[in-house]
Image (cartoon, rainbow, N blue to C red; front, side):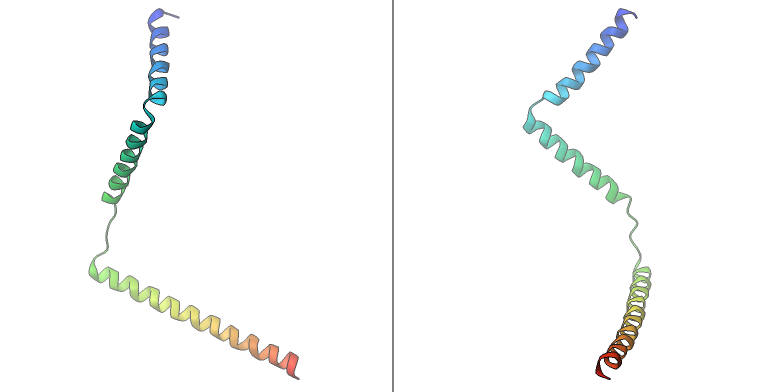
Length: 89
């Protein structure tokens, strides 16, 4: 192994240690700033629906919820009648 590669490994370790041992308050604010910048980068990638797409999606969700409510209500009614028949007579 040459001295230059050994020196570069030592300096890499020293850089990592320096990053871990820095001022804790400065590291905290750096981490928060990095987190916020990553959030903003991800928000720039978001594709927002147009007005007509939003209305279509809303309509689909409302219809789906109404259908599911109908199915659950039907089964509730059927099970209620079966329990009444079994317990009442």
